[in-house]
Image 1 (cartoon, chains in turn green, yellow):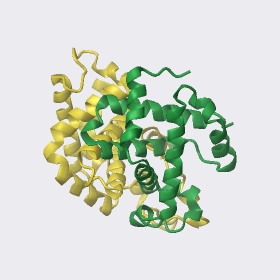
Image 2: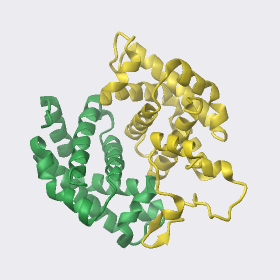
Image 3: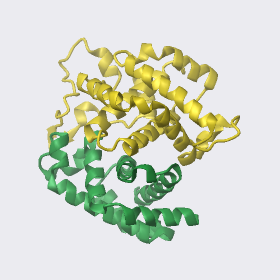
Length: 147
Length: 192
């Protein structure tokens, strides 16, 4: 089981209360599709992804970014057992969506960068470390059911 | 060439092979970086896996022009974050009394690192040769595991995003990420 310090727990709740979740999700996903274009392979039904502008203004990308953030919020609410809370999501990603799990880290990095952009100075090294630990646990839980 | 590809994979995210990239059943040529099999005389670019296009170089230089005044602060912040977020990197700085982000050792060393990045921006047209001396330093004297270059690159991107959210657009991000990947590759040139 993952051990969270009081600071980490409080920080993660605080981040989610401060950020504009929908905007972060949309920006993180569109950044991921732009910076790591091979990730577009999973979104062939999303329409126009042919340029950074097209991706940034694509409504399906924005909507899906919100879905992803919903998943992160679920993890935040189940901090002490993310692994079990994410069992079904992990099966979904491995068996139905068939996403290369290395891509989870890429999206997590984009979430970190977007949150940093939103929080600015408040995104101190300690807050950054707490968020990366949280995202690492989420990524690991998503990878759990792959075989 | 296989060796260089595996070294690149250690340092940076590796896209699927160019022939294999599809997006809804068609070859993804949208970023113009992919080269058709009939291209000739561009062996050196193909070797590098992530060639910097003219657009990338322009984007890096444009972003650098905006952020270089804060280079010292960026370097200090990024290094402070590296040792905080990835504590295993502290092993390279065990000789410093204070590893907090505000310590003079971290601040000074962050400045030094940014000096290296500034040099790399100037040598962007030939990073491999431009960074040979620094590569020898890291390979033979410092002996930093190249996997850590990726971690510091990520910290640099996070700091730039936090300090310059309006300038660090997705387009600037992808070019900067590619540049830092190539920088890391240049730094690891002399390792073995």
